Structures are given as structure tokens and as C-alpha cells.
Amino acid sequence: MSALLPLKNKKIILGITGSIAAYKACVLCRLLIKNGADVQVVMTPSACKLVGRDTLAALSGHPVPCDIFEDAGKIGHIAISKDADIAVVAPATAQTIAKLAHGFADNMLTAGLLAATCPIAIAPAMNVNMFRNQATQENLRILSRRGYYVMRPASGSLACGDTGEGRMPEPEDIMGFILSILNGSHAQRIGFEGRGALPSPKSPAELGQTRLLPRASGAGLKVIVTAGPTAEAIDPVRFITNRSSGRMGYAIAQAARERGASVVLISGPTALEAPEGVTRINVRSALDMLQAVEDNLAGCSVFIGCAAVSDYRCETIADQKISGREKGQTMTLKLVKNPDIAATVGKLEHGRPFTVGFAAETINGEEHAKAKLEEKNLDMIAMNYVNSTTQGFGSGSNELFVYDRDGLAAHLPLQSKQALAGELCDMIFTKAADGEKA
Image (cartoon, rainbow, N blue to C red; front, side, top):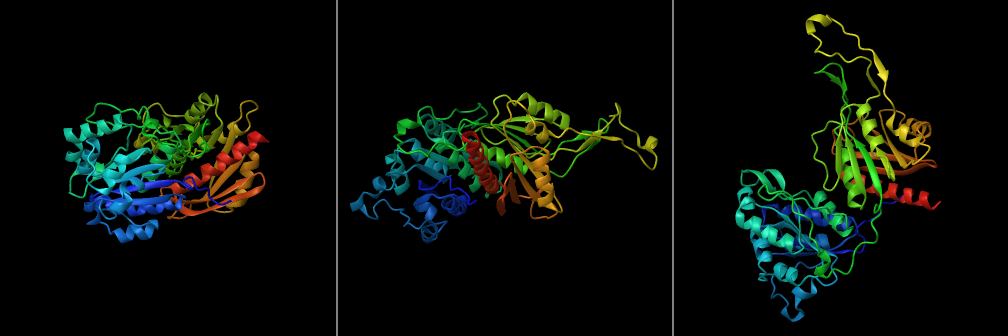
């Protein structure tokens, strides 16, 4: 099965401003095009000093305007935004944010955006103190009130040596932000000066947008995703767990949300942040996870069991810490079998959702995956090998072999877990919809 292109035939204006993060816009441009978009890059004069226009022209396949007077006869700043589905400014400097907030039109990008009638999104990128400055904060509020979508900047080490919020988000995150806006599933959450979250623009349609993506593939679906490891207690300070980082499950939750679904993410212990717009429920043990799944099954359309659930738990958990002096040279733990969460959902007699399992294998993956598909009564199972440092547990990439009742449905080659999650969700939602029609 070939990957679906969620941005096929969509025109996107990519505005690039004079931030040191401008180099990331090259990656974003390629990512948008890979997903089917027709990208028109527009650069400010400052951005041209950091990234070559010829580079972006080669990547996008279009000339890259910068000077508003380059071809005045064609009124380029008007034409460039015509029929666009969305405009995104990434990176957006404090200077450009201020110009947009106050209606300046002194370069091709600001003039084009002033004339645009499509949704506009911005990804701020600047020094932490510039971002926190009252003027910048007020400008962002102004833009949000007017219908702009403002992406929360990332935190971390900045090019200037400071640390804090102000980093341009990664291209994959911006891609997801764009998809969520076009699919109508965006739930904006930005904290300015600790004053809480700003809502999504109340009336983005007033900007005059006339074209949106077809109905999002996950629209109207309630999706439960389990992710991460479980931790089975031995005593109050010790537990049994596994190497799962939760990245694959979190990427799936984000991809499902981007496709319009209402997502409940039931997560074992991880250090990951919940994706935007996703409801996260934190659990520790396999029994805790099963209870959370059962509590949220009402109205569930799709269940994706991506968590690495412990197969066994201690029969008895010590009330107090077991002393090393008391244990001696050996210690025996009696383990009992945990319930199989995916099988519990797959074998429901009433209200059963489309059920997807995961199989982490080191050998005979196809044989084991097909057996689990049958034994657990699953509709689909995704198998990956975890005995490699380039994929699986703890890695940022993965490779999946997806099986359904007819056999191998798809081989999704090694790629980032975010990209993989998007392809997998497209497959799952298509299969689930076909099942409803049957």
C-alpha cells in the first residue's frame, strides 16, 4: 500500500524571516513537498542573508520572491497569496511578528500576508528574553485575536547561548501543526507570561479561506492509544519494567489527532510531553493500564495498543523496602501473568472498536505477529524488530511490517517515528472505514 499524501494538491506559502533557525525552513519545505504540497517560498531581505534563495527555489520548484518591487507590474504580493490553502511563517522573528501585528507591508512577505485570505500560522523563533518581552507578548496576543494560529516555541539551548523558550519547533512538529489547522482539529495552547492558554482563533473563516482538505480521515473518531512501558512493583522503591521510551505511541497519538480524531493517550511512565490536543492518562502498572482502557472504551472507534505492557507482575508486593541484608546472595520473585490488554479489547462481544496491536520481536517476527493477530482477535498488527540500535526501543526511527487478516498489508521502511505514525494512521483509518461500510 503506498503512503497517502495528506497535503496533496494543497498550496502552502512558506514565509522565511531572518532568524538563525532559517536553515530549518529548508527541511520543512522538503517535508511539505514530500507530503504532496505545492510550496511557494517567500523570504524577507534578512532571511536572504542566512539562506540562499537559489536553494529554496531548487527545493520548491518555484522562484523565491523577496523584494516587493522585483516585478511591480504583476503586483506579486497580491498574486502570491491567491488560492493558497494556508500560509506559515517559520521561523517568525520578533521584527516580523511586530510588523504583522501592526499592519506593516514593507517587504514581499508582510505585504503578501496582509493581502492573504487564507489561514495564517506563525512559528516564533528568537532569544528567550525577546520572546518574553511585553511588546512581543502583546503582538502575539493581537495576532491570535485576529485569527492567526501561533505555534508554541520549543525550549532549550538557543544560538545566542541562552536557555529557554524561543527555539523554532522541529519541521515535523510544524508539519503536524499545519495538518491540524487544515483538518479543523487544532486546539491551540500557548502560555504567554504564565497567564494561561490562549484559545484557538474564534473565527478563522473570517479570513476568507475557501478551500480546506477533504474531511479528515480521523474526523468523528474516538481513538485510544496505549504507549510506553509499564512498571510492576516489587516493593515501594523497586520495580520491573522494560526499555520502551513511548515515542512510537506518542507519535501515533499525535498523528491521529492531526487527522481529526479525538485521542485518549493512556501512558506508562515516560518523560515525553503529551501532543497538542490529546488527553493523556498516566498509569504505572499493567492492571492500571487495563483499568484506564476499560474506563474509556465507551464510544471508542479505534484502539491502538502500542504500549510495551509487562507480561508478568509480582504475586506479592512488599509493603516495606526489602533490605539488602535480608536478601542474602539470591532473591526469588514469584511472578504471575498479567492480563493481555489488546486481547481483552479484541475479544469484546459488544462495543468492540477496530483493534490494532503491536508486536516487538527479535526473531521470527512474521510468524509471531500472525499468531498474535489470531490469538488476540485483532484487526491489524504492526510488528517491528527491536534488536537493532537504529530502530525500536529508545530510537527516533522505526520500521514496521503491518499484517491484517489477509496477510502482509504493508511494509513501512525505516524512517522517523513521526513519519511512520502518519502512514500507519492513514492505513488504520482507511481500514476502519472500510470495515464500517462492509
